[in-house]
Length: 178
Image 1 (cartoon, rainbow, N blue to C red):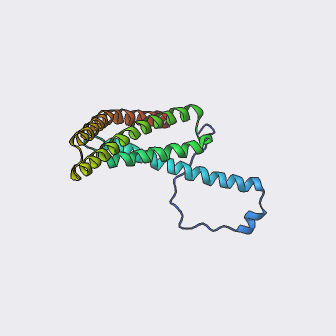
Image 2: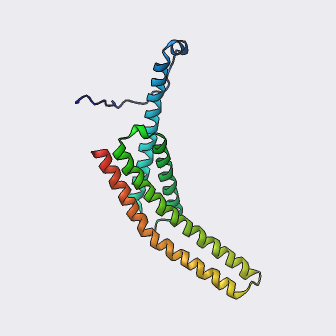
Image 3: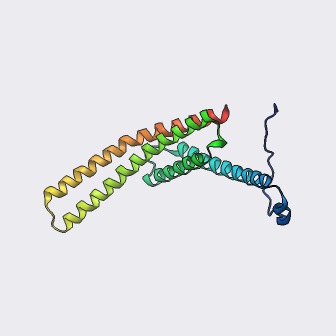
């Protein structure tokens, strides 16, 4: 085992009984240690669950993946990055840099994709509203062209999403296997 600590898989308890008088009498450092253990375990579990969701999303991603699903992926990547940001001491510094860098790249491309999707929808809605209220045809045409530019941008970004996902998954695999 080379002096490394490990966890033994056990079934989650139904309840935990704690003698609060005993806890109050304990040394403050011991109480903090217990809180630290619980916090690190909960954080590690949350990070593992989020990373698994991101990995599963990468397995099902293709050119037809709905924008809503990519938005959920973006939110998961953001949650994982923020969780890692508030618990940096739980990670090796080199691993931390690789993971955060991969998540930033993924978040950036997913954010740009989401922005392009939302802009396209808003421009089309505005064009429909103007058209229904006898708006100027030139203005409606300009809005439609802008919406088409956004659609083309989101299509280009879709390929970058695949690259960002692949990069994030490879970084996670290297980090956890090394």
